[in-house]
Length: 249
Image (spheres, rainbow, N blue to C red):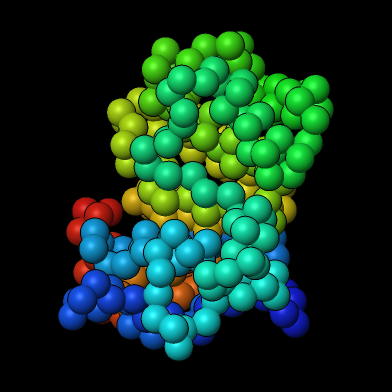
């Protein structure tokens, strides 16, 4: 993929610590507009922390620098602008249980973008159809399967028309038979040109949809490359060991 002169997401010297325990060690990363990046690695390697720093769900060291579409990510008046452009899909859905599926998807565009209710509803119904659950619009989250709830969460993130979608292990809380339906939605999204950063344990999915794969371990980017490079010819022994363990070869 040909990179832009200015990346959509730029990370420089990203350091994050909990007390004396350092989770991220000076991460440098650029992500181009329209790029799909999958982040893989063992549990505790800092993958989720990395993407949570991008929209400041995790605070990070003051001398670190992250920008999204040229806006610096830091506490202050610009943070709301960043978050309006960055959609997030979590492991645990995070839907409002007291609201219908339709209302969950309508809420943020009405509150943040000030979109009138009729227009917000029209868009919400389109998005629910896009993720394959239009017939669930009037139900409450508790009446849906985990896979259906996660598809609602994706529709909700898309409702803000974000420039970036962040996925934090979106299938890890799902029963195995529900994983495929969520990955299918994400595959479709990956073909639409939206910028996506996906923390995932689904290696086949990462190989199929990613423009680049990042392997993290111990809070560092150990190896970054195209899927064929990472999965077929990894340069680093740590990458090879991880892939042997998860792919059983």
